[in-house]
Image 1 (cartoon, rainbow, N blue to C red):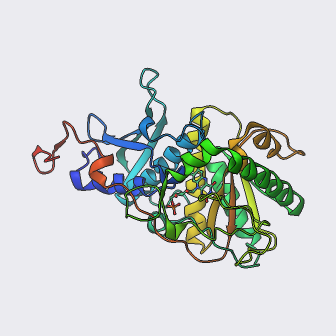
Image 2: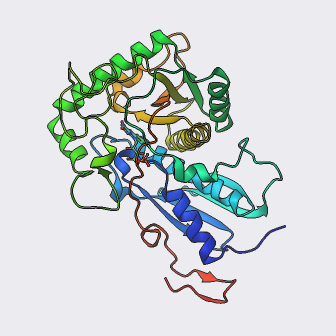
Image 3: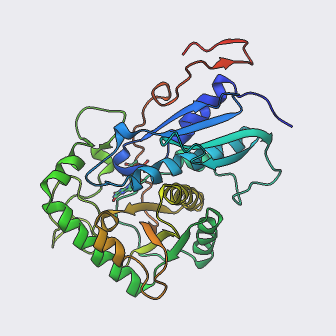
Length: 338
Ligand SMILES: Cc1cc2nc3c(=O)[nH]c(=O)nc-3n(C[C@H](O)[C@H](O)[C@H](O)COP(=O)(O)O)c2cc1C
């Protein structure tokens, strides 16, 4: 039995790993506090960091927080502890997304097939063109199994599915582009000049004179180009991530699945980026469902392949996301200095 309170140093490691997760526009809509007995971490959504026009229901916000929850689980394992997750444990506390209890020793073999801790820091969004090279079936099979392990479904698309999803994404991208309020909201998350702790820096944008065959998100408001300076892969490898339900607990599950897939993909040398535009309009989102299967709710579209790793993007300092009010570091025997 571990049953040993977390130290300040361990809490900081857990929060910094969680905070390295992907989030819509790098909004980082999360906060962490130690559990009252200091045997785990409470994870909160931060409504002040919502993106309300693009994400009115808070779906992407919960997916982002779910991804942070998964990183926390991986970091807990690195500390030799077995993460036990409860989603939305308190009805009266709507912002408490979940708890990760870390009171028991970690299992002897890594529960996700391999240790994913290093991948937390190596994973970045890669918005550059990928090589025209297939992702091996065996790797796609592992990613699909990883999603199932989190209660979500990763559907790896064949050519007709890819073309359907690209067309829906292109429609949604054009619609978003014409929506001045949404574009202003997106631009407000750009950090093109001064360094910042959140948002998207210029180095991470990817080509902005886009190749119309892969409609990546235009953050700056440029139009799709017929003569792009860089050619994207002829047929991207796309996959949709779906859940059976469409409530906050499902979105948190989707976020954990996204991160488990993305970390595993990173460990395999794959790159990824999210194509979220079609999820942001009800009709294009509906169209993302596989017409043959027709069940479930698509939560996002993932593009996988081989290419540049993508640059690291900034994160808020741990002191800003980890609330240590009242925490006593039992290992040092005193009140924390924070
Ligand atoms: C729910 C969600 C939606 C996202 N949507 C998009 C998107 O449509 N286009 C895109 O390029 N990146 C998208 N991203 C990626 C974020 O912009 C990215 O995670 C963030 O800027 C941090 O960068 P990093 O992934 O390199 O750490 C999305 C991420 C999440 C979690």
